[in-house]
Image 1 (cartoon, helix red, strand yellow):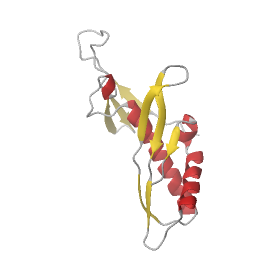
Image 2 (spheres, one colour):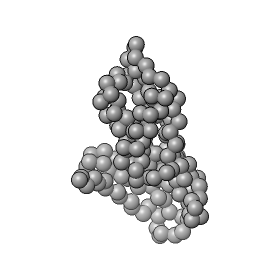
Image 3 (cartoon, helix red, strand yellow):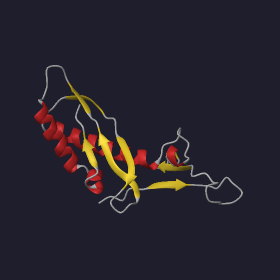
Length: 149
């Protein structure tokens, strides 16, 4: 199997590393060419113009789910014309009382070529299959909800 990597770089900007008085802003580099500015979530003092790890987790799940759905749809000869998702990570305390991403909601909207459609039950089955085969979803276990629109 593949080993997939990123590079992360953080440099202290303040004179000293003092609790509550330093920036978490850092850069994550993908494939030695694409940099993303990352910070804490805004509720934890991060810059809202940067992404945060919780958004990145929701993004990874949403992307994986979509790619799995498209692979299954192609095998089923469903002519998918577009796919849109609004993924939302929810923060809270887990069963151990620790802060965590307690749930990620996916809200996929699938459009087909003109003249093709599937009923709600067929779409639900295909979305369920995509969820079961998505590597990221399998990593996260039970914390994903798929709300088909």
